[in-house]
Every structure is written in C-alpha cells, then in structure tokens.
Image (cartoon, rainbow, N blue to C red):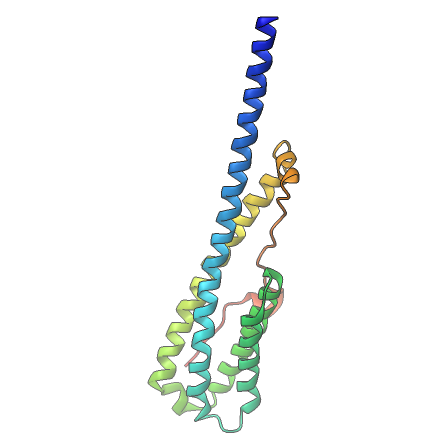
Length: 185
C-alpha cells in the first residue's frame, strides 16, 4: 500500500501545483488586461483635457458654428461618462466624428488655422491620437491572449470555477471612424 499511496500523493500534489499555477497565470493575465485598459484611459483623459482648449480657441473665430462646438463638447462628456469598454468605444466614435466636423469647419477660418494655440493643440491632439491607437492595440492584444487562455481546456475548468469572464475588445465602428483623425491647418 505504501508505493500506491505515494503515487497518489504525488499525483494530487502535481494536480494541486497545476491548479495553483493556472489560477495565478489567469490572475496575471487579467491584471495585464486591466493595466492595458488603464493606459487607454490615461490617453483618453488627456484627449478630453485637450478638447475644451480646442473649443475655446475656436470659439472666438467661429461665431456662427455654435452647433459644431456643442457637438464636440457633448461628445467629450459622453466619453467621460462611459463606464464599459463598449460604451467607451461608442463614445470614441462620436468624439472622432465631432472632431472631424470641427476640423472641416476650421478650414473656413484662415486666421484660426494660423493661430499658434490652435497649431499647438493640433500637434498635441495628433500625438494623443497616436498614443490612443497604440494603447488600444496593446489592450486588444492583451484581451485576445486572456480570452483565448480562459476558453481553452483544461484552463477553462479553473476559469469557470473562479468566474473568470471574457473581456470586451475596444473596437471602433466600420467606415469613416476607422480612418485616423485628419487634422489640417
């Protein structure tokens, strides 16, 4: 009985070790997904901080374009209020559309196009858009790895036991929203 008991104890120990390593691996992957989301959030907040300055700079020149400026402000607030990844993605699509509309209107105001504040804001916004794009890609890569891991057997057993759920990708709509924001001055 001694050797059989020893083999059973070793097998149980190996199963327990696998279980612990799998659980800890899932925790690490879930935390990487959350960290990746926080990086997107940092860049989105930076973008939201730029938008009021952009609107204020444009306001003095664009007396008859109140609706365009209001749309940008509303879109910004929608982004700030978003609580889920899907809500955030929808808000970002709205912000992108509102900024496109704003920059299209700015083309009609030569003095505004040449304004140093507007040029600096444009450069900062372009930089922020690039950072958002990279952060979105990193987040989606992290989500893909995490979701794949929790959906595969035998890891799925541990994932189901401890309620690990698929994370949502940060996707943008088809069409114009997939193109980068074109800022022309």
